[in-house]
Length: 73
Image (cartoon, rainbow, N blue to C red; front, side):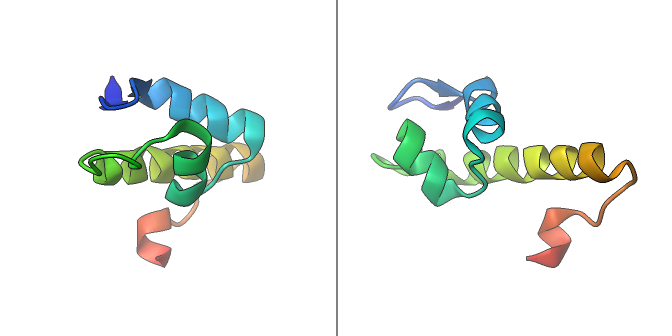
């Protein structure tokens, strides 16, 4: 699914960048992929993709269910 139409960035590209480059914030995604740097309409969707991927990574690393990232923030 496209997250940022201005820069043609998909949710898969965000997840891949997070895995390959250790990205963990919207600021880092913006710098690396340009997401949210132009009109900003995609920022909320990008934040959700980031949070979901961080939760997935946490569950994979520790092997048990983790506290949702949104509950911590």
